[in-house]
Amino acid sequence: MRNGIIMGALALALAGGAIARPQPPAAPGQAQPAQKTRRPKSKEEGQAVNAMLQAATPDARIAAAEDFVVKFPQSDFKALAYFAEAQGYQEKNDYDHLVVSGEQALESDPDDSTKVEDQLLLARAIALKTAEFDLDREEKLTKVEKYAGGAMDMLKTMSKPYPALPDAQWEAAKAELTAQGHEALGLDQMVRKDYEKAIAEFKAASDAIKGSEPSYAVRLAGAYDGAGKYDDALAVCDKLLAVPNLPPAVKRAAEAERARATKLKSSAPAAAKP
Image (cartoon, rainbow, N blue to C red; front, side, top):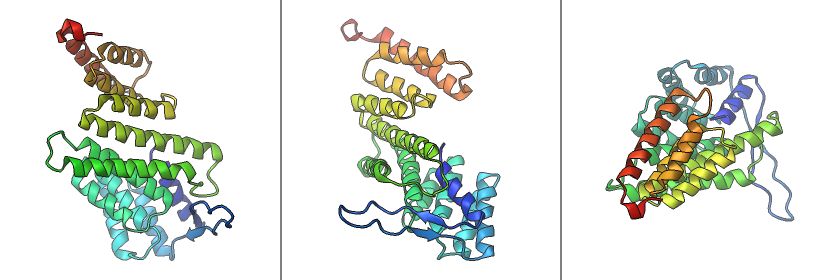
């Protein structure tokens, strides 16, 4: 359900309904504050939101988002526009522009759901683009941990982003978003070469969604390889490769990780073999 909350909010906006902006829980003994609402302020603004939602390609989404923030700089949907732009750059594998747009979204008064998903998008992207010997490694990994940890903390108490969302879908969305946070932290620990922590994070990611995202298993196998637990890596890969109708990209990655584990195991000193 990646980014489903955001797209659902946009769909409601197009229907002309006011969307409740979740408020933080009230302090003990205090009344829950009234929810703020956001809605297109004009027909033209609604049409511009629609252009972002209906964009068929990453370039079209980016162009629609850029057009939106120029024409409607005070819009309640400005953060959503920057987030949509960041998504477009993610699809284009344009890391630098993704980070710029994602951080602009965070600076534009995002509602809770936008902030959560944007932080997770940034955390994963930054973690994937950080290498062991980068001069700014610590600065980037600190951001990963801040964004992923902040998003998961928000999810613990976050209310539904809009009332029409069924409870079951909201719980599934929170589980998927939590899994993304654990994945980002696992990637962070892989860069740090703390493989035991990476193993724990990738397990937590998979457990959060009951194993429904096979790419987390591939990452877990990689963490086992890093920790020298080659038999565990092979077991994860074998279990994954036995799944019918595995997506081709995941299957290729699992096969490559299995081959890597086999090679590492065969070349490891006898005393180091499990």
